[in-house]
Length: 201
Image (cartoon, rainbow, N blue to C red):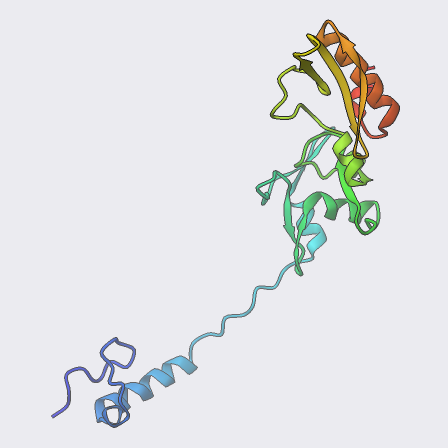
């Protein structure tokens, strides 16, 4: 008498011990399963199209920025799989249209739009130069101006600039606006990539 658990080869109740698998219902089910498996259509690996046209399909161009509209990294930059590895979209665009990026160098957005892949808005920069080109204020800023803090001891606003690991003092002032002007002048003296300061001057 056959075991009622037999005969369903792909089921959870299949016999597992060798002598049980020799029962006729299990052998019949196993042959049927193997025949069905061999006739299944093979799953072909995904074949990616040419990565360059596929890249531009994910870009919306405007008169200014060319905005990446596909996958984004948590830091706000576009992400693109070129068929070999995941890359930053703005770096991929720069290499396509402007040439290779020197090792250890970054790509700075002059437009301050991290989703932009327009090579006209991208430039090679060191980490220091990239930091110089800030779009806004630090989250801990309380004065409303870059490089300006309140000195309680002197009862005055202080203008200062961090450059190559050193703090550069630009003076004490009675108003934050005066201190901001002094900090901007000092950055223009020391920095090379502080576009926002230079446009405002």
